[in-house]
Length: 388
Ligand SMILES: Nc1ncnc2c1ncn2[C@@H]1O[C@H](COP(=O)(O)OP(=O)(O)OP(=O)(O)O)[C@@H](O)[C@H]1O
Ligand SMILES: [Mg+2]
Image 1: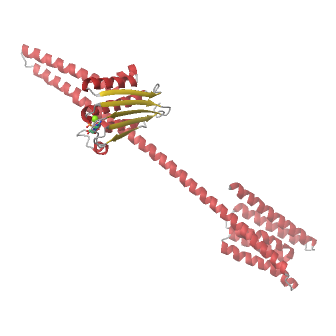
Image 2 (image 1 turned 30 degrees about the horizontal axis):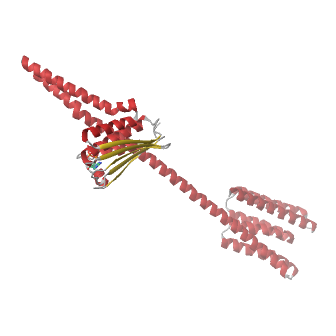
Image 3 (image 1 turned 135 degrees about the vertical axis):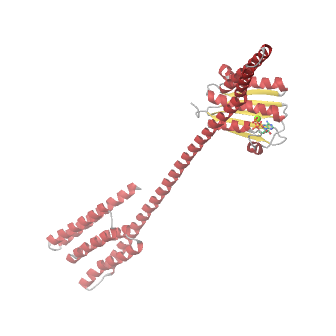
């Protein structure tokens, strides 16, 4: 559109210069004194050029331009032809009513001048300028409308782009907030584990040691035995917590093998027919994603064990170029996922929420499809590329 506008401006300047030159030539050959004619034409062009560069106060500028033109017409009737340029400028820079009124006045001068001078008005002499005026006005208005439309289109486009940028920024903020909430959840889980296991053990050991100050020899032996048992429990609990943070199964054998071990344990301990299926390429998956999927599987199988009353559970791990997916399906009693997710965490319902948060932290999601009596399908999926 900018190019069209530049071309139109160029044509407009050319038209003004050519018309002025033609009028100048005609006037001079018609015997008009050349000094005022040349000075008048130069003044007209100079004022025109100043207005097009300055681009402000167009109506006032056009009125002054018209006054110079009127002086030129008074000097020589041949100068009327510049009026075509004036009609064009009026159509471009004035409102439609103002441009119409202005064009009529200029037309009156163009037609009226020769009429007054000769006392007659042949039809072609009136019709020609009238058609010229209408034509110039229509062309100028059409172009002005085109420019307005394109400016409006650009404004709409700009506001769409800025709305999209805002939405993206909001998404990024939301994702960051979810990640922060996920990290907070992990800290809460860790502090709960430490409080329930290690802190209890240490406080028992402190109490047992204090009791030892006033105990006899036999009592001391009993206390040392109790302290040893408590410390051994604490040690194994500490190992469990550390193992939960960095699952050794994964490091040693990879996700499919770790899932197979989970399924075997479920089968041996409950008799549920648990199977693992793999599909596609699941090599080179980042450890953070493998850990998240393993934790999801552990939580899901713990649910199958405690809530589902299932006879069969299948874990399907599949990988593509873009994402890794783990589906855990059981044929148990099913449940209403919406109610379960909304449940108060203090009375259970922590597992699914935690899994969902963990997956979201990596840009993934957890879909739950279940209904009472219909079994349960959990689908955990994480896009590759979200984690380095
Ligand atoms: N496979 C399933 N079959 C039937 N019901 C299920 C299954 N998985 C989850 N549920 C239902 O959804 C609820 C929420 O599960 P979630 O794992 O979030 O919490 P939870 O198992 O009750 O407690 P925890 O925080 O120890 O995991 C469960 O209490 C259970 O009623
Ligand atoms: Mg659970």
